[in-house]
Image 1 (cartoon, one colour):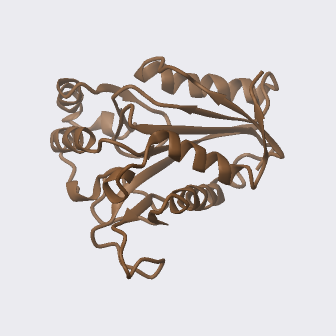
Image 2 (cartoon, one colour):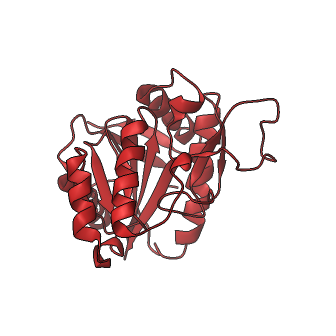
Image 3 (tube, helix red, strand yellow):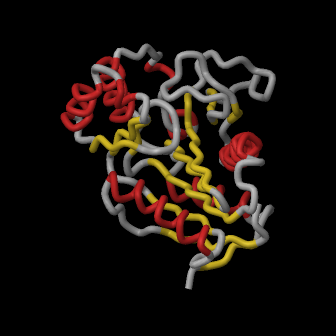
Length: 244
């Protein structure tokens, strides 16, 4: 990780597609040296971000219409796997950093950031961990999950009843990388509903019981609290600078 990171809080969403494109623009600027290594934090408008593979499925057009019918804007991202949904109750964290050999550490970054976000969520009382939940949407080896608190809480617990709380994706170019993470904090029902409709249209199987939010497990958690916890963990690894 860079020795210092400029924290850029995007106060308002630019729109579903524009938010995704802005991340790529910032990646280009960091790569060229026009900007330093940075963290971009924002709350998106309701969006279903489809993966490139989704767009090649026969049901993609129907899935996009299903998303729009639920009030979620369909968009296509360049990084990441299958469709993921998010809205104002989620926190998007884009870590953008120059790197001479950006490809070399690509796999290791997934593990590092998975543990970073797990640590942040644990500081708020969640029994969080890293790993793929069977049947989760946009499945990934380094998904961040949470489990219902209880006496058996801890790393050794199984994944029965676990909820996917965060997904990550990465875009690597020569000389820089963008690691984007979406943490679902509040109001999971609309996300679950739109994923049911879009995955059905795409013909993809998944278990809706795996989709949830941090507040489903520890009531009262807010996006602001998660943002503060994430920055507190980041501050142990890098000097955080306020954007001028």
